[in-house]
Length: 106
Image 1 (tube, rainbow, N blue to C red):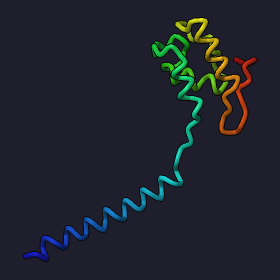
Image 2: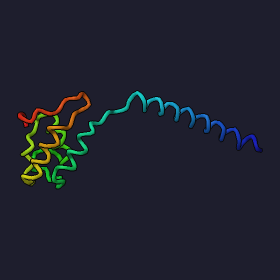
Image 3: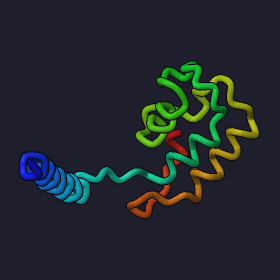
Image 4: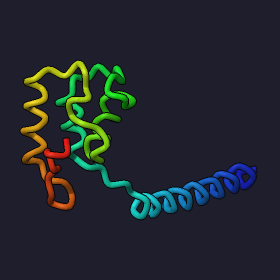
C-alpha cells in the first residue's frame, strides 16, 4: 500500500527536478539583455500612453527613439521642460556598447 503511494510521488519529484534543471539552464542561455536606459526614458516621458506619437504607448515611443525611427518631439503631450530633461538624460546616458545616442538625429 505504501509503495503505491510512494512510487508516483518519487517519479513526480524526479520529473519536477529534471524540468527545473532544464529551465535553470535555459534561463542562462536564453536571457534577454534589457537596455537600462529604456526604463529611465519611459519615466521621463509624460506617461499618458495615448499613442499620439504613432507608437503604442510611451514604451513603444522610447523604443522608437532608441532605434532613431521617431523624434523625441513626436510626443504631442510632452511639455518643453520634459523634452529638455529627456535630451539632457540621453546626452549623458551610455548604452551597453558605451555609446550615447546621436541627438542630432532626434
